[in-house]
Amino acid sequence: MSSTDDIDINAYVDGELTPEERLEVLDALRKDPELAREVCELNNLKSQLELAYAQPPGLSGRSAVRKRPAWLTLAASVLALAVGVTGGWFAGVNDRAGDRLVVLDPQGRGQAPATAESDETRIVFHITTPDQLAAGELLDEVETMLQAYQRDGRNLRVEFVSNGDGLDFLRQGLSQHQERIHQLAESYRNLTFVACKNTIDRLQVEQGIEINVLPDAEVIESGVSHVVERQKEGWAYIRV
Amino acid sequence: MEKKESRSPLQKLGRNRRLRQEACAQRERLYRLAWSWCHDQHLAEDLVQETLAKGLSNLDRLRDETRLVVWLTRIMANLYRDQFRRKREETGHELEPISEETPEQAADRSLLVQLTREAIASLNEDHRQIITLVDLSGFSYTDTAQILDVPIGTVMSRLSRARKRLREELEKAQITSASVVVPMRKPS
Image 1: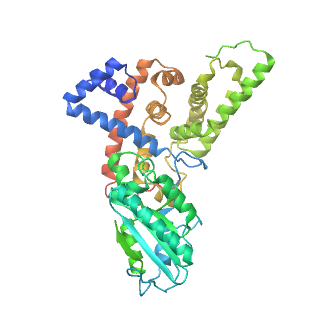
Image 2: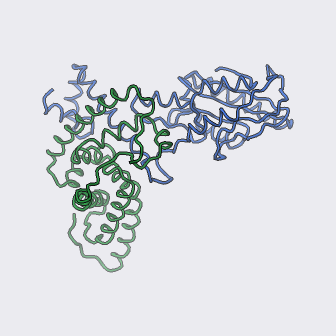
Image 3: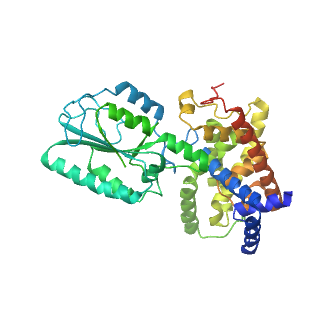
């Protein structure tokens, strides 16, 4: 590729060409996969740079990009506080463990209380499907359940853990249930949404873009490890 | 752009108050750009502070209000070139990417972010400035030419070379860091 071509391709990526020039480049891209790959890489580079400087040291609060929780601290909390619970909950059977639960957020945000109530039903929904219609129906069911437990004065804890293809459920701009999730998270302290950092990191590297999750979601290191821990603690596990 | 216009005293007061607010609202954007140039929190803070001080005291010289951001960024680029570069040459202070971060902060940052910052820091100043002006701050080629006071053709050729260089650096970094789980540069 000549240096003139280089300059044109850069100008194309930066939106600096006239409509006629853009058409010419588009035509060239259709005929030349190598050139198309070059455009793709330049676009990735731009996104990568934006991501790299979204939160420089010394920039306080109100950033366009949400500050990530200290996931290492969270992971340590999970390991330190997780207490194995015997006699788990299966298909409508309440466990009576009343043990300490994992603190999802050491800063006190989020909905998870530090200590479990007695007579508590605990369910973790593992969202691995990109099918947001199914996830939406699940939200309906869970809300009905939360209402029923609240009405009857019974204790319930519910977690949604999204990873892999299921992360879209909690991604800003991609989740079809952002408002609903916010409304539910505000209404029910016993409901928590959790996103997998491993998935976020992988997507960021693969796609070269910044992945933002909903403000109502907590981020933990590994979604899979988390649901395994929950099962060990006796939570009912339902994969969606 | 910097010619003085005649306005009534009241018009001038109102205009300058509005522009001051708009200029201060650019603080975060300017800081992000300044930090990407010097990778030093204190230098970046000083640079932004001086830029705003100089800009606010010279608001009368800004003719086209819609060009406020470009105008402020041009002031910052000039300050950086004249003052901070000289200071760094005098003191021998070298660019030390992410040197202020604690290991905990560094560990909290993704590998991709870290490698990108290091690659940017390894570029020469012309390349680093042009690539951050266009990609980070989103300035057009025309605005960038005005900020750096170079012809638009220079912006285009320099940007093309800068990106090529950056990609080479990133490729190199990713290969050399392949065996490291979380590469961190400790504070010097």
